[in-house]
Length: 281
Image (cartoon, rainbow, N blue to C red):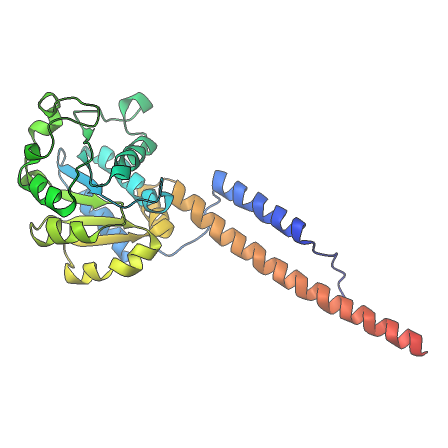
């Protein structure tokens, strides 16, 4: 019988840690299934004409939520490639930093070698206090809610804001936040603006029903898997691929350890039986 050395827990955890770090830093391209919902979301942005304004906004973020940002970052890269414009509309205090993080992580600004210029191609607005009431007022008249961007620059000095005055100027709304129902109701349901939710896996299972309520207006991506799918459609590798690779490879390693553990157990039992026979003789 095959002899398997003792599998100490500290060795197992050390191997898992090494595998996790390696796949997170250098994804190797573990296979995954593509989602029709992700393809449709990508196609919607792909179909928008240049200079179209996309709003990114919502509330509800767990720190810098890597799960929901994976697809949003890939979508921002796509927007920049398509020559679209982006307005970040934070509806929560934490959303200001998160939405800026998504834009910075996409490396689309000219200071990172990208095609976008701040104030011309994209802008980050300050936190809009007031929840759904503030959102409705903002959609009716942007200037009724904001007079400067998050840096304090008057919006009249930002070229992009000259073309953004109400919901009628929004071609698409994207939401990488937990509180998607407020967007589904007031942005899509009442004003007919198409929206994409770059959702966490838990939120996806909860809010996927909106895709059935508004089949031609709302699309969603599913957590890290949706991020990896979106990255694949854009021909890039980012947070989504890193996470899916880690999940897939670590799962395979764990199964291998389970098999080795069982072989070790059977080997030990076999040795004990041989010892008993020798004692009887």
